[in-house]
View 1 (cartoon, one colour):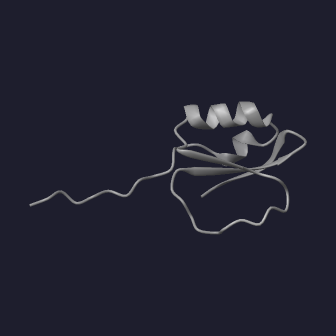
View 2: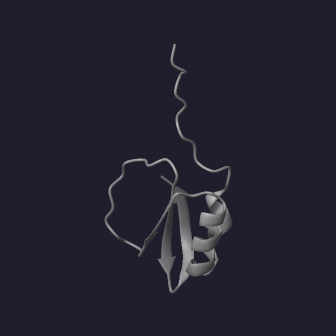
Length: 71
């Protein structure tokens, strides 16, 4: 019998830890901590709302992460 597949999971990391960091430093840290995709957005950018495991979103204002969330 084939093994039961396991769903991928997000890294054990808090998105709040990235708020206030310069965007380049935040992106590097996120990749080091296992995030497969890092999406950088300007405030007010229209985005799709599907949840993607392994994706971390940054809303960036003046080169600094103002908001961060999973998916």
